[in-house]
Image 1 (spheres, rainbow, N blue to C red):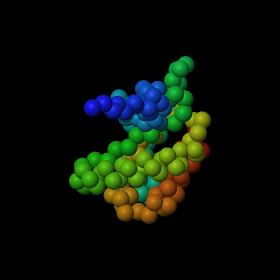
Image 2 (cartoon, helix red, strand yellow):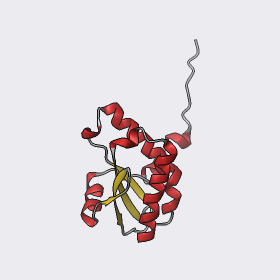
Image 3 (cartoon, helix red, strand yellow):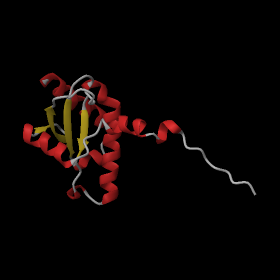
Length: 136
């Protein structure tokens, strides 16, 4: 018997490829806290948000980064995960509005985001991003 080995795709398994997507997100608690402490909460129809500019060091990612917070009050894990998946996809679609801005954004969705039609969710997020871009 011959053993068949799957050769992993070097691009998808490399750390460099993964870091490009990771750079677009806030991940660490300290990053979220910096945004919370630097700004006041702002409100949209379907979500609240915080946005803070940041100083970019040479060699760092200079574009916008987005973080999501969906607490247990929003429902069980599968509901929270659905909300986060929908928001991530909407952010991917609308991130062009923040292109070139060194800004960190934290989104706090309301429970209605779960059942909101996706086009309305994108429109809401586009409005939030426009407000942030206009303030910068």
